[in-house]
Length: 145
Image 1 (cartoon, rainbow, N blue to C red):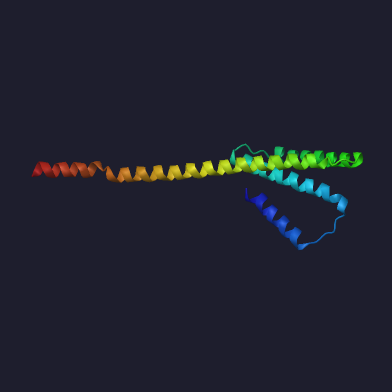
Image 2 (cartoon, helix red, strand yellow):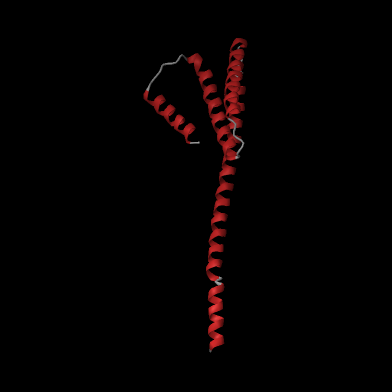
């Protein structure tokens, strides 16, 4: 799980260190590519937390989404329409949905871990209090008196 995060950090570092001039016409396509990659990253992270991760689905979904969105944007350019906005809205909705699912999964895991620790602590305390050998010794002392 740390490998994708390291790749993201390296990509952010490389992007901030190196400046590449891009023509304005490509800005639409780059924005869609960034949204597609962010959607895939969050979807992959969500599937890892839900124990349903499949690398082939992640990669194929990334490329299929990116190509479909780029094709939609290109078709919109040919028709003189802003069809790339459909992809932006769709990816935006999916990103927020994935973030909500991630938040939900993380909060549930934190609650389960807290409950597990509290249960373990309570059981250890009960085990310390319940000592049959000590109770036997106390009964033996009473019998001798």
